[in-house]
Image (cartoon, rainbow, N blue to C red; front, side, top):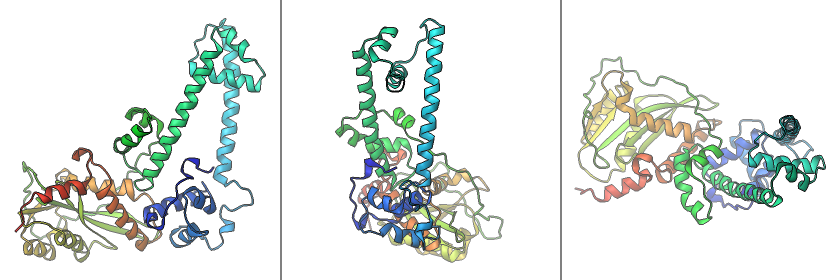
Amino acid sequence: MKDKATSHIKRSQKDYNMAFKLAVISRVEKGEMTYKQAQSVYGIQGRSTVLVWLRKYGNLDWSKPNLLFMAKSKETPAQIIRRLEKELADEKLKNKILNTMIDISDNQYGTQIPKKVFSQTIFRLRERAGISLSKSCRLFGISRQALYQEQRRIFCRESELLQVKAMVHALRLEMPRIGTRKLYYLLSHELSLCNIKIGRDALFNYLLLVRPKKSYTKTTFSKHWLHKYDNLLKDYKIERSEQVYVSDITYVKSFERTHYLSLVTDAYSRKIVGYQLSDDMSTENVVKALKMAVRDRKSDLPLIHHSDRGLQYCSKIYQDILKKNNITPSMTDGYDCYQNALAERINGIIKNEFLIYKCKDGKTLEKLIETSIKTYNNKRPHLSLSMKTPNFVHEKTSQQIPTG
């Protein structure tokens, strides 16, 4: 069914980043809408723009779109299922209403029915069973005015929630799995302008939250002969950006193969300052993320690089780059992953909130990662940063750092 709440949004070509494209492709390939409906719903320019995306980035064969969800019926299979589910739910509700009436009769009208359920019951009985509203109200000792007032409140609330849904949907096109607390923070100003009153807990209840999938692939090999460095962060206070960088490697899968993402993050601002996607965990690829982080530094103040005891970080190539740039190495003790918890946390955010679409190949995944990190750094608020974005905190503190 067409999303009326977003049908009015008109987008330009610059809005079509990789995350947006994959979000649209996902909905089309799941059968939630046709590619032509997607064009209309999201205000996408061009007659076949979405079809081009499907052929380029989709996971199905879109060379013959008429064979994929393009039946003569105006409804997609998913829409037919939802319609049938709704009709089945209505029949179940009808039976529930009839059983409720019997129970009320058996107990001499002693049953206490909540106002919202009661008003829905009365109006449904009037529509389907032909029972007059005045007679129903007289039997239960309430006024028709109270019933109509309750219905107006319900309709008004449903209208407000539709607006909230549209706001949430617009944000989640860029940040598909952003947490509800951060979502509520980002929406608070817009909700206030629209005079919509909804608390954080009410937003929790209204939204359908998705639990992240748990899986694990080992990316750290620390049983090697290379020199391992001491952990310098024990009881160490971080007070500025570019004081401590944390690094880690995580895996990301496409339909083509398993890829590896190397990240370097500023521990104070939580900004991802370096990244590299590769098909293996070779030191030559991992060190590219470090070089990106070093290239964009704004000061020459003392800097610590903290990581696990992986072979790549202990290698001569990696340590030479640190030494050349006067960066002090620091590593976790043994196998305690909590000593590099911040890097692990950033990995989880990127994978579970942004990289939720399995890409066709590494090239597409690389574009998605670039878009995701840009959105993470510039738009996603952090609880630990008092709901500020990583880039905002990084730039603000960098301006206070003396250079030279």
